[in-house]
Length: 469
Ligand SMILES: [Zn+2]
Image 1 (cartoon, rainbow, N blue to C red):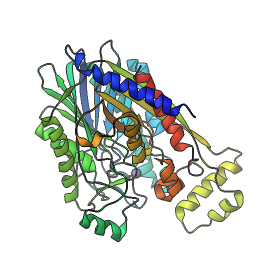
Image 2 (image 1 turned 45 degrees about the vertical axis):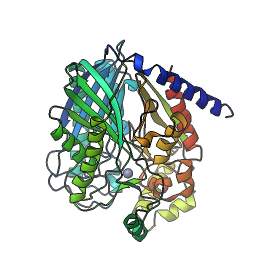
Image 3 (image 1 turned 30 degrees about the horizontal axis):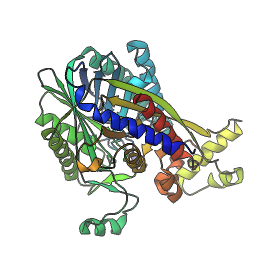
Image 4 (image 1 turned 180 degrees about the horizontal axis):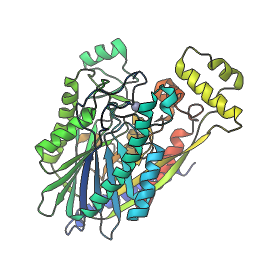
């Protein structure tokens, strides 16, 4: 598409115009905000998600899992409800249940709701199709189904609670950085330890910590929303925990009584915390992130104008075809249980005369808060390249500097539908787990086609163009 550069230039020019008038619209804020939160830890022992190696149910709780909702209403009544979840994934079924319910009960369109999960690996498995993949015992499958049903209803109530709590508010933006996320594809094994010791880790990262402060009319803090691009995989134990993000939220709430701290997962698909695997690392990284947010809150606050715009679309993605029948028939006898499972599934579909899924609509949404924050949230286990490209195209490339030069650009992955890794073209071509290897754990055919990044980015341009109008 030859007009892409022109389109980007136009969108960037609009951003610069917004910046020049940014200071004039914050005087008499008509923002209204409401918050709610609830514990969503399953009762008793349950089957955990996140690691294929889990062979037994959960054993106790390190930190309760929470769901939190922040309802925002801008001048003129446009609303956005941000729901953050200490959970591994948001499944399409969950999103469908919550978004359909939110429309029916509260008149919210899908663009008015943002569902984001922290991707903690120390919480429940929620993907019902994984029953046969992981050989999950029946009683735990029954429990998982009941939990998902309960959760959907609870999240709808949570949104209603936040909406009922709407009251005059003021919003401000600030930002910081935290350095514990590492590129896990580029630093592995002994090399990781050597490079870490030498301070010479390689590969793209996004250490940006965007912060949205929400206070009532007396400046009492109601909510602290903050983002970071890193897997919540500090631990792989059998205790329930929100991992580093759970700790960061806990520390921030302890330091700011009465405020609800909400973690928004960024494009951390190829990012891991480091070091990890010792319980003390949970608080170590949680503290590092909470401190980064604390520095942002203690620093210059940019008041956010009360104009709210939201938009949503889908990126139409395509999968490469599945293996041919001869290969599949060989794979059903594979020593690798996951390859066996996948081949059996695809053959079953073919034998039943069904066409395996060849394309997928990935949710992509944007929100503009005054002229001060431009937020894009997309589905999938989004790799960091998307966030970096978004900031390069729409910003001035200085988001890691701590200085707000334009509207703060905020990129969230893991939103609304987390069914697979979303590789960039670079990661797809490199291959490996996030590039396409992980597809063996899903019901989708091959890796994505090479159009994956451009299709996604075209959808990002569409929603950004919409909220900048
Ligand atoms: Zn993951």
